[in-house]
Length: 407
Image 1 (cartoon, rainbow, N blue to C red):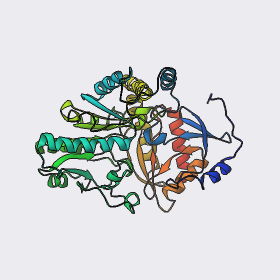
Image 2: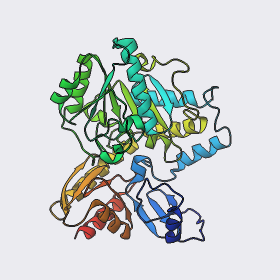
Image 3: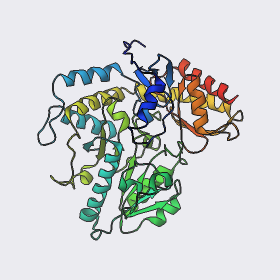
Image 4: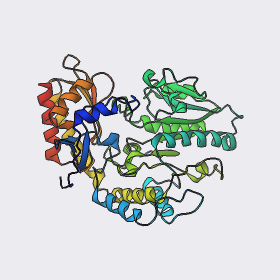
């Protein structure tokens, strides 16, 4: 790590204690205070180093402070950062053209956060249903999957099945039908003449990296096409190289009607998200019907364009695929030795730990002591999502640390 240290006068314990009375308690972070980072490594305020195997829930697919992304941000900071969409800016068209070409779709609706992209897609799908499909006013429905995670805004938690996200936040937004994930028969039964769209994660991240059966996404595409409704793929966590392909839907050569991107699209520097779709879908929006002051701002567009350029080479997709085999082999070696099961695709894995050894939270704390950062999800499951820049040696070192913790 070559970052010049900027020392704080306060220790980790003091800073953690200082947060308690002034920050809303909507997170339960691990007891580490990160002060610096570069590549796959972070450093806390005392100078201890940790290998990052979470990568900001895939927001840091290219590692911390990737030089090409930092250079693009610095260059743009010296020129122009924000105009709002009241005016054109000289970076937005290039970003949109590059992202459309990368995804094989026509039009881009730039937003900021992943949840904003999902909310935008819900609005577009409903408007498309009324204007194109002919669904009667205010009767459009959207089919979603059990175990989904699309964000935590009011509309989105209305169709969540996670009670920790829902409890106490009603009344909920109507218009959604929940079906079991990876169940084409249940999906087909839920679709009717009011269905505007089917909204799914090609791989369910928050649920523990749940990978559907081969052919499921192809089946969803076929069902929605026959029913005359839209297929919306939420690739906010799974997209942009994470699974060894540019998109998780690429594993089945499926092209959705709407694609939702975020997290890694901002390179770990600024929040950038986007709805990418065909012209026949996004074309239903007219001036004044949807917007964002910061969506598509010049700084975001510059960083997003640099991300698209990195992915256009195919290098990161190949790295995720190749190192994904190392990850899978390492987890197979630990199965039966504290690991009861796992699901992995590319550099992304949900690892189920024997509850007799510890909860996911406890394993995360033990790995923290080993100098490895991961995060738990439900029960005794942890998620592994290292930056795509990780080396084989670093990945093997992290797997060895997991073995020591389980042993």
